[in-house]
Length: 120
Image 1 (spheres, rainbow, N blue to C red):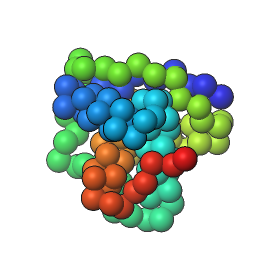
Image 2 (cartoon, rainbow, N blue to C red):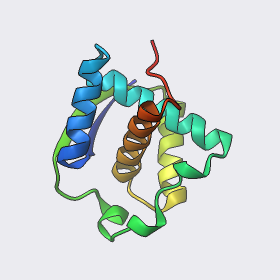
Image 3 (cartoon, helix red, strand yellow):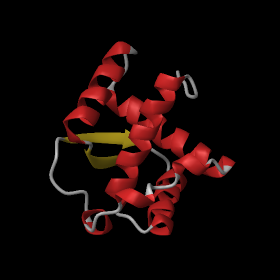
Image 4 (cartoon, one colour):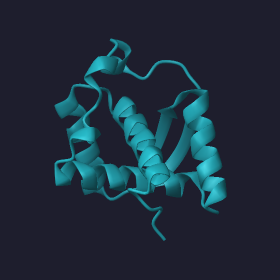
């Protein structure tokens, strides 16, 4: 199913998504989908780094992601994947939009460090 999302990544994060997608010859939505699937895989593996940072929990993350350079995309996920993302946001006590942005930034960092690959 196509899920319409709005990612508030800030200028740096938005540029990183745009540059990474372009550099890999992919659509931004493909990169973001890979990020979400990578995040879910890392949660399943028990990796501590996937937890939403405790030090960065301003009140705006509890209700919404606030204003910043937003990236609006449609991402193809199955219902179970979307449900898992929602469940993780609830478990972490953050808005879904904040968790999705965290997943994208984690994936970009893992790509840069060689801990992840952009799926084919």
